[in-house]
Image (cartoon, rainbow over all chains, first blue to last red; front, side, top):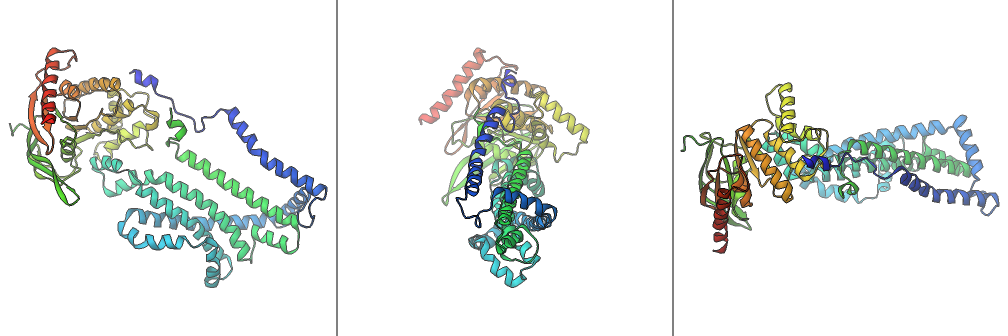
Amino acid sequence: MSEALLAPSAPPLDSRSAWQRSLSFRRGLLVPGLILTAWIVSTHYGLVNKHLVAKPGAVVTRAIKEATEGGLLVNLLASLQRDSIGFVLGALAGVAFGGLLGMSNLSNRLFSPTFHAAKQVAMFAWIPLLSVWLGTGEQAKVIFIAVAAFYPIVVNTQEGIQGVAREHIEVARAFDYTRWQILRKVVFPSALPSIFAGIHTGLIYAWLGTIGAEYLLAPGFGIGNLMIEGRESFQMDKVLLGVIVVGAVGATINLLASRIEQYVLRWRVTAFEARQ
Amino acid sequence: MAESAIIDIRQVSKRYKVSNEALLVLDTLNLSVRPGEFLSIVGASGCGKSTLLRLLTGLDADYEGEIKVRGELIKGTSLDRGIVFQEHRLFPWLTVKQNVGLGLQNSSWSEDKKRKAVEDHIALVGLNGFEGAFPHQLSGGMAQRAAIARGLVNQPSILLLDEPFGALDALTRSRLQQELQRIWQTEKITMILVTHDVDEAVYLGDRVVVLQPRPGRIRRIVDVDVPHPRERSDPQLKALIEEVRGEIVNVTAN
């Protein structure tokens, strides 16, 4: 059984050393650091129009003020709630519809051409249509966010299901699995990486859609509305605060999605590990 | 003979449709397999040996003739017939233990008996300590061991092996051949091995069926009257290997 001795032990999720990771993390900070420096220097020495670019200090002050007595939290919560509802609706519909396209040849032939044509319509082109149908209120925003999340999830779910290995299905058939068992025990887990990729993209699109919907379908609370307020009253510190919050939330969503994906799909071989 | 056979293959022909023409891959095959025997089926590529195994598994029901197991025509797949493929075909999202347990999904055994069967078969193929490993963490040989355990776990009376060691390196292959001989002796079940490796076919088989290609037919059945466990250096085995190889080379030269 010397074979067993040669077998590698479970590879870690990230096989780089801690030092390498911290180095690449520091490298990643270089560009943001330079931008921040340029921002501080240019605003401090008046190299840019102070009406167009607020000072970093002013943005910090504004952040504290908005967070304590202003509407930052209310707006942020409104955006996150809208984002979540829209995303969940879009994701449920997307997995269901993508699953249908992946599993049934008939529905694939019926719906896929239309779906792929509709996919070509740029996301924000739906806004005029939705605002006519549903007004500019909460309903229209949530539906728009759902649509944004829907597309990537449909595409990836369908691809994942169609990509299931015939060899694995034969194993299940040899063990007398029913159609339902094959679906649950073979097709679904094998499609999961692709479904997750779709959900990940869907999460990002939904957040983009949230800000877009708030910005373009104005009335109500939201980070997008905070930015509109800032723009209209020419408070650039408020606008910049909005930009920073939108970026931070987006980055957090992205990070959380990656972590969950990494954990759920820990059985996957990455190209790096497969090389051994 | 027909009475005592566990598998009876009668007048079996198989055609594949290739660009609207029916290509004959198996031509009126007749073969009886004895209970508990180790039967090797050997032949050059294109002789239909893997096709025959698919028919026996029940994965392909589109053929002419009759295949009976214990006197009954086969209908689709059955838990009584286990299969090991050339590629291990383990599910990458399941651990070794879960993969081996796949074969028990539709078994009527109690949970306790299932757990015990999984443990026993992991031990049988020598994978103790790797129960929680994922397939990508296993070497090719270990993955194929797990696949053998999966094929045996619900104690089928027949195990079908489709070139199970074809993708392994020579050292691992000969070690696993030895292990398979031991497993066959322990489990006392019928095994049918399809291979293009003449040494393997003769070393393991009680009988070696030599198929000839285009269309696949039985050329000869060679009895290997050497008691198990066998030594590779056995002169009788060596002579038989040469004999079988001669049959295959003759065919290819024709």
